[in-house]
Image (cartoon, rainbow, N blue to C red; front, side):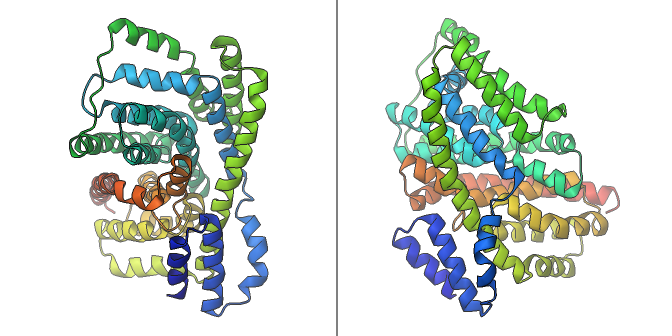
Length: 422
């Protein structure tokens, strides 16, 4: 109660989110009477970012900066524009399609939001869209990255569950595309609600030119996805390879990048990575305190006592994961919950481990855009200048659409489990 009140007061005072998370955790420790945790607090704060998988994040942020400097991100956005026919809220659909393309490259919501906030939001503003609506569409599109390959969340789950990552990638394709389709339906409603402008017609010749110009840029998704699925590189290595390919394409093919452009891109990468990793560390420290209280294991036991069918188990699982996602970063959340809940799902209820992984990752991804910890929400707010409160309100329809997809996935998974004798 005291920690929640402190968080609210600090949030209303406009305290930086990372500082807010750390301060709230300290208050929570003192209020719980576990002062012994204070001795390990500094070590755990740094341990929150001592993860090899997190090395992927700055590399993907660097990839995004290089894509912007080399003209690749702009050409992918132009390709998305060429693929969309004239209709109301056309730029919002273009934004969504561009996010879909970026999700196949980056695998990280924060990295994707960093790129798309700089690329799409100004373009939509010039097209007559309200800035807050533009930012909300961009932030929602970032949810595609944790669900579609090469999602870092799926990769982490595969490592924890000892599953082939390509199986998870294949299992996530249809839910990811269903999520994109549901977002398109929300954009149609937003177009009516805010009377968003209609895009102009593009000549066939202009569409073909956009496709031709984007062909070298499409090499980047091939490098990322191909190297991971082919087993030639880890996600971190694929990000480094894609960054190198981006530099070569920007310098030699598009010729929009110069050697002096690399230094500013590296500086922006360092600044953005520092801010985001501080957020991750703050989220991790809260997760550490909750784990010390044995919350995940207690929740798993409670679910098993209450659920008497696969469907009931999955419903309770979704509720638990949605709640945990509000206070845990996806990667720490997956690492904490998968070892506890996966054996219950597979051994007791006969649920497919790949389906469980997709449901887990989709739930945890929602936490990226929900307060109080949502790193994606605060990243979008930081990059666009729109308040996190306003963004949360405008993201509500996208949140409902995601819940609808999650509900469909839950029912299908429960039916499959029942048919196989789970």
